[in-house]
Length: 270
Length: 271
Image (cartoon, rainbow over all chains, first blue to last red; front, side):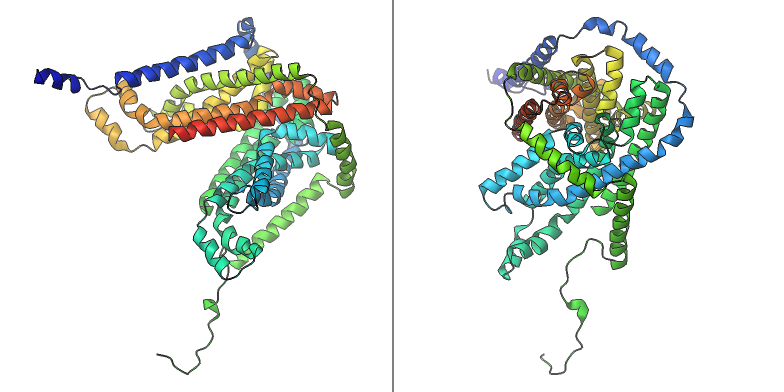
């Protein structure tokens, strides 16, 4: 009798999950699959498009090759413009995101109303995609890089601001108290107590965002906000696929290079 | 002991702000370099003040036409929104599934080199090109509609989740892998008993984050005709229906806020 109980408690074969855990796990699988199937079936996807997809893809590949490399001389200026848009936009972000981050951090904000405003600004900025901001600013400033710069800046505020606000909330309060105890004003506490603690995070985030922004600014031209996207969009609309190939290659190189640079800088900061 | 003899005043003992870059020469030259860069780019971008001032009345005009937001066509809005959410769900679902093999292939410590390189090439390629560019290609191949959007988001989710997963697997301590291999386990047993228990929490967390990111991205692939609320938004912009545009934007913000709240809640429960 004793042996039987022991066997029941300690089975001979090791199993990772108890039966109850297994049951819960499978229930989750079923729920996830159900959600996936429900969403897919509601999308009314014309499945017969899949039938000739490989033909279409092959046709596209055939038209894209070989790339017309003589086009590359026309790409230098738009590429520089693309980088400019990303860089200036990111610099603007630095100045705008900074005060908002202080509003959105619980320990530096004035009261719950300003905290909410800060949070709302950050979420609003992040929820609207760069392209949509681009649409807005093209309507305001007209087509061109100026609209692109503002679009980049407005989208990045939310990203940078959120991470910086989180960093501010996690600072060491001792340093702040020490500065406060010397009778420093609010601004002085901010500049001497808080800023040096979050500065590495700010720089790191800004550099990280810059390399995302390079990627984003390559497509801003689709809505007319400057950069290489304008050329890319017009080539696509004119079915000049061999030029598209060259542009994609150029974009690939620039984005990869920016990612590389940003990784090196971030490594040195931290 | 206190001595009455005056020591020479040592300026290096004086308090000074801690700088990130200690060397003043490098620090100041960086500032000058940045200034020069800004000047160069502003000149080359041909940005002038009257361009900016010209924009201000137009911005005011747009704002007055935007406010109040027009919710009268809420049916159209809701349909677009639902389509976006469904696109995000489907893309996350397939992204989660496809990311498992892709992530395993992209971890250098458990697969042979050629497989690793191929998987990494896929991840780098799809990370470099913005969703909109990928969406255009899918629209060309599969035609307009949500199908192109779903495929675009699936590709980007797959590469994102698999990259995170590969990093996680590569950072695993080699001890456990060796221990399981020492029992004579093959590759599949290694995955089930060693890799998956260690990679699972992060994988689920990243997938849920990606769901929230997909909701955000699904609002934009529509601009090139890949379905969802983005298509409605782009149409309203090109018809200057700014009050409807604002209604859509506010709804998107609300939706993203909800998605973020949900994803934060789930991820905090996971920990």
